[in-house]
Length: 240
Length: 240
Image (cartoon, rainbow over all chains, first blue to last red; front, side, top):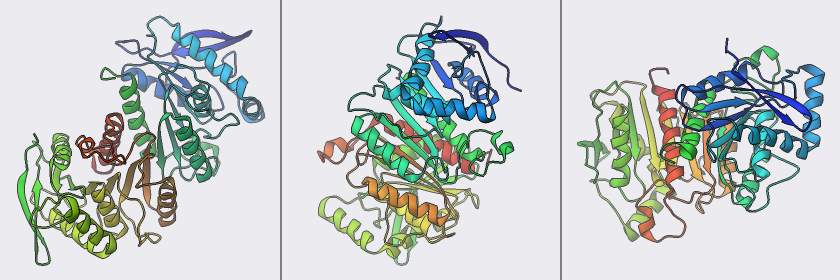
């Protein structure tokens, strides 16, 4: 059981968004926006938030669907399709969370990163592509391609993408396209591929879905987590 | 200044090989064979050995040229070409070091990994391809392709390869070929690509060579190191 964080309400236009704040014992201004998978804020986003707070970051799950809704089935798929068909909507929604987080008490300017899983991974890559002044973004098993590739010089964030080589949603051609896009954009990017991992490999609950495209992969999850912590510390740590 | 380790002499047939052993304060049986760049055992291999010993591993630089020679210029290039033209020679020479390390006092069966830089990275990948029962191999800016790709099931070691996307010696096509080879072999493999890194990005002395294909990249080096430690711990740590 992972506990919800402190309520964190913000807006995207008229839509009320209900995120959370998970604060570390000793804050030092560093914060990470955490964007959920397709469903909404649940255990798979609160678990990493608790761990990020444990290593000194204010971890803030974003609410992408509005009113704190957790979706499933057709409603979830429809919401994801709507975002996928409208990159500006996706960018605006995640940008609203980023802008709001920057205004939270205790969050230092220039020390805000964003990370996400699956749909959330796609969202934070779009945040980077949009040129938002986020320090770093990290995507785990998110889609790597976009209808609006980054132009040269657009990405100011340091970028980490981690993916499973056996994820049917992210074929090798998409990894190659991401490599090409990031290189052409001149981004400071890093890519981690786990050879045996499928989609949603970081999510210990995913096996219950019975979807053959997805499986929890504990070693890949631990290696991805170690890379994330090193990546955040490199960008926003005391040494950075 | 990095100190040499304890002398460690072994053989490949009639050739005397002069490696080193860098022991941790508290040994627990875990050991890492460390294979040098094209030159031989110098600072760029002793520095990581000291750090590996600091996190609990017996670190053992291999001597690939024989008699502890450190080569430069034409002699170095000729030696590398000879290994490159003769994969069985390369595999036999690195296997000799692995076999010898397994017999060192304090080294536990099944808890020996191998890592290498540049030429040494290529060497440890060949060790894995040969089906040697090494627990893990990690290659940093080594060549990723081979004349003798691994057949399905041949690789029993966990594999990590880290490379720079701007390394002219390892173009994107070679990364793709490695991905394909490891996947077809069914290996437990992990790939880390640093977007802005050139060849020899882990070597702080490389800028002195004035070779435009090579440059030290401190953030990439730190991220690669964090991944290595997590990878070794995942494979041979107390949790493994």
